[in-house]
Each structure stands twice: as C-alpha cells, then as structure tokens.
Length: 128
Image (tube, rainbow, N blue to C red):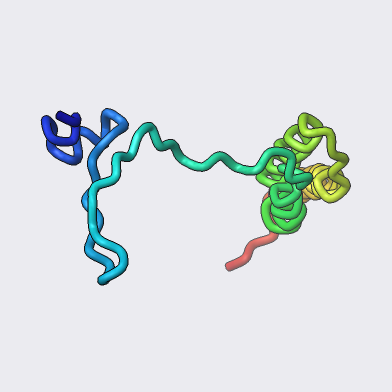
C-alpha cells in the first residue's frame, strides 16, 4: 500500500509523496498513476553576474531629488549590497552624495526660513 492510499492527497503532498492520477490522453497513451517523491522548489541560477544593489542604487538616485533622507538610506543599502557581492555601484555612490548635499541644503533652508520668520516678527512685518 502506498502512502497516497492511506492519507488524503493534501496530507500526502505535505509529507512529500503522493500518488497522482493522470488522465487518459488518447489511444496510444493511457492514464495511470505516477508517484511523486520529495519535490522541491527550483533553485535560482547561481552566479548570474548581476549587481544585487543596482536597482536600489537607481531608486536611491531618484529619491535624492524627491526625498533626500530616504535617498541616503536606500543608496547606503545599495552600496552595502553591491560591496558584499563584489561590485562597484557608481549610481548608488552618486545617489548617496547628492542625497547628502540636498539634505544639508534642506536643513540650511529650514533654518534660514525660521530665522527670517523671527526677524520679520521682530521688525513688525505683518502679513495681514
């Protein structure tokens, strides 16, 4: 007796083997029963040669112009992944540098606008 006969199909599949009935495919090929044992998911191809941080580097570069703090984080992650895989990710480096520059300029702009607001209040300038 096969284990596919003792267990429901789903339980036998969880155990790694099951009898799978095949349909009758015509006069030359008849249906039957095949035993599937220990099938696993296909493994990805090893060493595809592609930089794992390439896409993150591009995203980090785009984020440098939109939201610089996120650009810093994503570009740093892309650089780390590329370095671990042995690649040099120039796009991520550019994204990181631009993100840092834009972040510093943003902080300076916020400080300057706050200072201008306080100076306007002290000078008695009103927007009403």
